[in-house]
Image 1 (cartoon, rainbow, N blue to C red):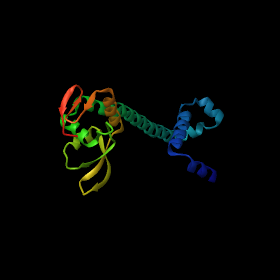
Image 2: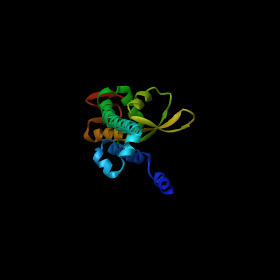
Image 3: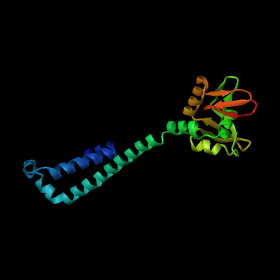
Image 4: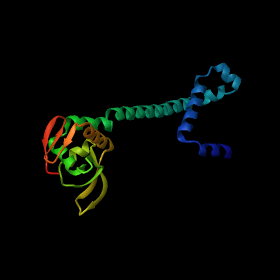
Length: 188
């Protein structure tokens, strides 16, 4: 009995369920001639209801896990951060939100967007950028109660800096030109 206890302690629940499922399925589906040779026909007759219950319950458990993994794979494809960020940056972002990104994250001396900025939490332009995964709050610790550290999502940072290098975004002291639209801005 100690031997069985040791084996059960070392196995994980998925492995135990797998062993039970395969053994129950094999005993249930095996022809009677083979069961007579193995001398377990009486076992199958006596415990068929339990074997069937194991097959149903463990099969349902594995079916649920398979459906759950498929759901996560499909969700990852549909709601991929790269896809959402690209779509929002190229099509949906307002001029005010883009100016906000330039104001907070653009470094005019290095001519590139930076990863981190301190942003006042009461600024309403944060919400759509956070919802579309352009920025995220890096820390819940604040300076003076309202200034929080925000980061540009790595993919958004890469896209913005790449567009600057390709000349698709031009930022000078008086204006911003992005996606072939002139966007008025502040003095940098």
